[in-house]
Image 1 (cartoon, rainbow, N blue to C red):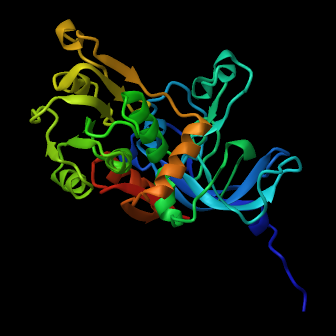
Image 2 (image 1 turned 30 degrees about the vertical axis):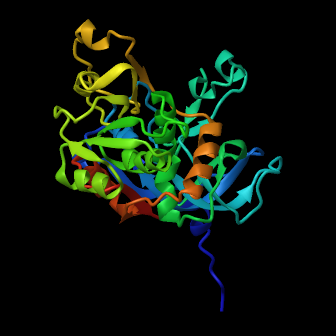
Image 3 (image 1 turned 90 degrees about the vertical axis):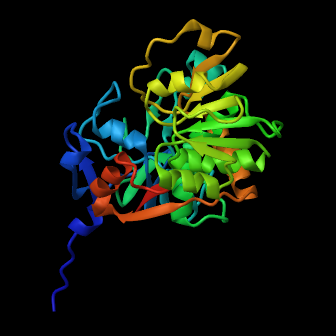
Length: 346
């Protein structure tokens, strides 16, 4: 009997591919087969087990980010096991569980990289936007930009930590909230994946959290996670905030947040994209209030956050979807139908 081997199975993988920019309501991701990537000498090949679904993926798919690389496989909260390593990789071994984050690679030589601000690198590439991501069975990444994942988390629990978690953590830092901020009051505008992780870090630091969100389900989740007050974006809390993080991509929230911010307080804008910010009355900004953006993250942010996340430990609220259901997951995310974070099981 002649044995027939289908080589096709060894060179291709299933993935969700974006060929052209479109509203997610048109279900533009094509569940198909594409060539399986191969690592170069400095990369690892990861067999993906879970990939978080992020609002940034929506911005990529709907064309709201300035640069477009098409076709592209979205997804940048990737958990999996190393299947193959490049010849020069010494940091990891085959079989280790790792995470591939948003920050794919930086140049290491520009002024920002030299100054310890690699999140602002002039030549950075980003997973699922400028290089193929994790809505797929396999993904490659430079070994130096991959994280070991703490054993405290399952694959689906860990996936949202790689963007929602890390960016939320950096947002807290840039808002002025740290582990040395007990008793301070923090406002969170928008209560999706990032906020539901950030509140757990803030509460671990004994910070009072006030959640501003329009959805009653999200208010209940915020209460369950320790918020002392919840309300809508234009509601007035009983006290003014020391710091605020705006996660929702709505520019008008900057004005709402300034109205409840203390003198000298900081608002950190946690999204990569935001609708236009309206004109601001200078008196709202006066008294040394600060509004600042949060741009990506450094590798150290990720390492610091994952250590804190394991110490707490963070409990992610996860709604899972199959890889072929990526369009469904993103539609649910866009229309605020996800409680916590959405994750694709690969």
